[in-house]
Length: 283
Length: 137
Image 1 (cartoon, each protein chain N blue to C red):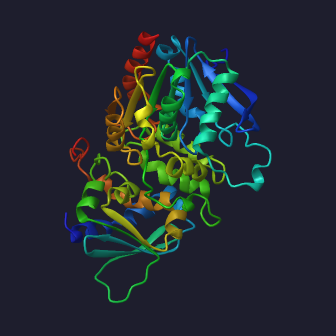
Image 2: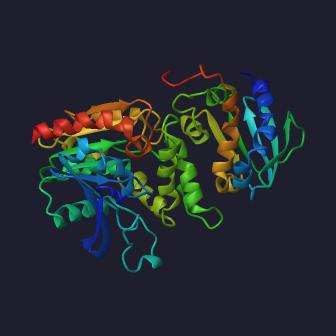
Image 3: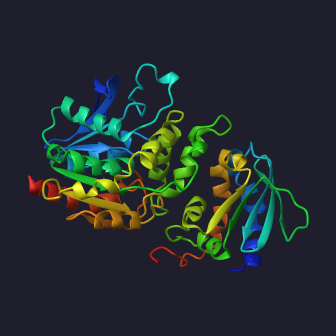
């Protein structure tokens, strides 16, 4: 029997991100409206594989996920071994714009989860004309620190084990075991200090309460979806964020945690498809 | 449940853990003592290479431990429901919610976090399928 390939295609490109050459891995499936997917802190673009193999989505959307430099199959830039990795608001935004520009995407829609959900608020505040719609999954305008992230990168604690164990409770108990563990595998594989470095952005360099008032949802619609079991970005965090932005509405997803697209794709698509339908209708 | 009832359930950890080959393997580099507390009732747990060697309920006059996981008895009760409500479904979530706290030398805990969380979730198997906190505030 002939091999059954998935419809996902992956390629590499070297892009200028933050003034440095970065070899970036990009994968995509489908055709139509470009939908740029942003993975969570300490993981990679594989989290979006279910959306890329869902014909109801790929019939109308060109679903594109890239691994941020230092993540997944994207390399860290030359010289990384001498540095402490710290993602910043500027670097993250630059990476997203670099991929969109390099691929010549025409006003893509963006879906981002967790730190990816956070950064879409910055895109909405400062780059609204570049995007046709923004979907913030597990999205809030800021987060107060609630644990010491130095535990994520120490010589006497295995980084892959502790990163996965710290986030394992962020997966809802109803999510299928197969996808729970696949989601955690992404954290087990993360490079040393990368989850911690991403959390620098999430905790220290992305308090966007100062710019939510700049978000004009009539120029670029914003959709917020948060899982009820998410204790990192809680439903209350998302509802507070939505309340600060005219035209933004928070939907709280039942039986979902912090990684809806990868931990429970069947439940997530029920919430996502109506949003994608609205984006299509908006043109 | 009361703190004493939580302690009685924790007393069954040796039988729950030690017959679970995978769990013992995951805890094979953990040996030592830790404390689990439910309201004011302390439960001292001694582990050797992933096997639970002893579980004793206090109060204690002199008892050492490396790390402690302390929570309200109600939080442990809800943690062990068949489908726990958000915030009660995970020990780290319980700390975030403010109904549990971690004390002492956290290094052995963080180095074996998956193991400890799985051990402390095991009493969930005693829950009746109808006991679900999901959906309630």
